[in-house]
Every structure is written in C-alpha cells, then in structure tokens.
Length: 263
Image 1: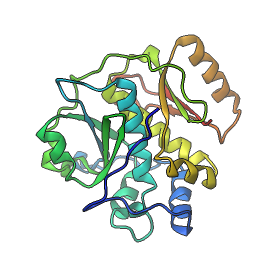
Image 2: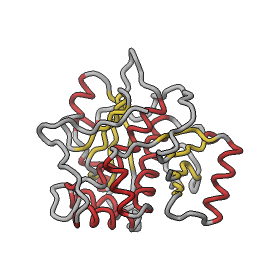
Image 3: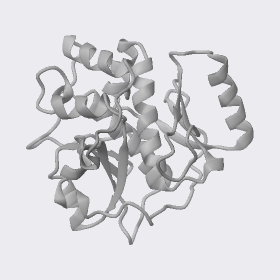
Image 4: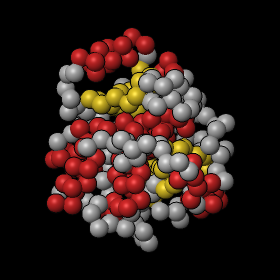
C-alpha cells in the first residue's frame, strides 16, 4: 500500500507532530468521544466538517483509495497541533466536536480542487487518490469555494484492492447499506476518529507518524455479522470502534456503518 502523503511544505503546512503534552491533550480530547450537544435553534449554525474528495472526470481514482485518504485526513485534522490548546483552529474544532457532529463530503475536480486547497484544512494523498478535511464551521459560514461543490450524485465503482496489510488498521464498511462514496467517506472519517481516541496515546502517535495509514474494505454480510458480534460482545475496547449513524442521510437512524479494527 502506498504511504499517505500529508500537505506539502509551504504556506499553511501542518506543524510537525511530537509526542509531547500538546499531542497528549489533543488525544485526550479525542478520547472523550464526540457529540453531546444538541443542534442550535438556527439551522445555519449547525456545525459540520466539510470533506472534499478529488474525483477527476477523466481518470477517477479507486474508491477504496479515496476512502482511505478521507479517513486519514479526518483524524489527521483532529490531532493536528492547530486544533490543540492555544491553536488557531481550536475554537472552531471544539465547537464542532462537542456538538452533534456532522461531516459533509463534496466532490471537486480541476480548478475546484485547486481552490479547495486554499481553504484551511489537511489533504491526504493515497496512491494518487486525494481527500481534504477542512476546519469545521457552521454550515451557514462555509467558504463560497466549498459551498458550490457538489454533494450528491457522484459515486465510484467498488473495487477489489485485495487483502489488507495486517499491520494497518482496517475500516470495514457495511456493504449491505449500499452507501455512496460521499456517505462512506463521512463514515470512515467518523471511524478513524473513534479508533484513534480508543487507542493508547503511544499507539495513536505511532499511527500519526505513519500518516494515519489505514485500509478500507467492504465487509460482506457474513463477515459483518462476525464483526458486529465482537462489538456487541464488548471484546477489545481499545482495538475496535463502531460507527452508528444518526440517520440524517441515506441510511436508517442507528445503522452501524463502519467498524474499525486496530492491527
């Protein structure tokens, strides 16, 4: 599997990660889980993380690689020094993480993708497949360059990337739900966050040092049933994390969409 690449050095590049008190504080915040707050009365103030998937028309990337990039980008932003104590992104990040959490995945190509790179966030590249997680904001304050990007109506064919690397976390997607690539991108982003928060801080940092490399695979019904049994049995709380969707789009409320398993 190709090593993910984070933002290249330059204006707005991510600060280096160090296993210091700052990383420990960011991990501790992530370990608390997310959500808890209700929606504001004003719908425009609902908090969301916008995720941009680079899906060129001529040579679209592999679906599995796009989802791996999306999962890595989401958790990379959550453990970036800029969201930690005193960081420039901290207020916006915490306002989102401590509310009813949402992610919105959008498609970009050509000049749209280039413009998205100028909006604050983190891009991950997995073998040429790219996804960018943007600093969360109220939905009524989304940057105009992002607001105009398409949300629905785009999908990618399912591919068969082969057995996952045994040294990587695997994010198993519930294939029975038939989620679009945008919906799945949001769900694997939730899963990577949950898994990083569940891991001991040293293991989470080791994952960060490798660019949050992960494998995303479809779980067929029989395999999914075995994974659900592990989740429901409470086995391995630091090695497995499950995403249950709120049911705003595509799937029924309470649906288990992704199960993340540590190596």
